[in-house]
Amino acid sequence: MKCPDCAGLLMDVTLTGIDKSYRCFNCGGVWAIAKTVNGLPAEDQSGQWQRIEVDPERLKTGDNRCPNDQTELEYYKGGLIPAEFKVRQCPVCHWWWWPTDSLFNFKPLQEARKKEKAKVRQLMPMMMAALVPLLSLVLLITGGVVGVRLLGQQQQVKVAAAQRLSEVAGIKFENGDATVTFVYAGEVKTAQVFLTDESKWVPVTVEKMEQNRYQISFGKTLAGGEEVRIRVNGEEAVVPFRSIKP
Image (tube, rainbow, N blue to C red; front, side):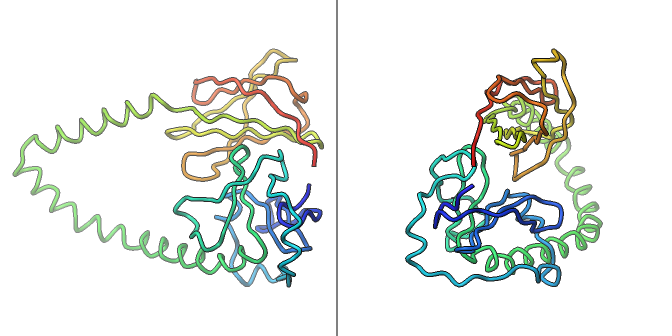
């Protein structure tokens, strides 16, 4: 696979110890999925990373194409990453490209977020203990009004859940590995893939990438280019696999 910034060769690296990511050692850019970035280890565990000095002219030789499927990369516009980091994302496979040393610069912000979340989790029991008497008083005063509102909210959730499975996309790599990404409006409890050659459904493991987006990874079990069906919580979708060369 080639670097979208300088056209250099991307090399296999691990950022968390268990992931499979890629880095360009010509310009320092990192190619990884959202789940990997969200699980970055503490600073004292990442001393193996090295910053790379980059000649700005070198960054003009790339084609801004996804290393997996050659789709043109788009700037990430979500709320998880500030625009100043200039992270780009493939609209097909949803991997992230972190140019030069931007991932190193983002890491302190990620660590600060984790600490804030940990503080909130510690405060939640005390907050709930304080809210329970107040909520009981509100229920007594308002009678059944609160219950009616909660019922309406549940009905809205059921309507939203009816949409569920969407944005299904499949990619098969030259080494035989394959991935399917999809968006699911709700909790994914079960997932299966239908193997055409064997005419049977096979359970698969689902990884959560970001928000409601999920990924299914396969080993060397699928024929390149064949049409594959997935089933998520009983809802089926057809996904044509595309073969990708590095």
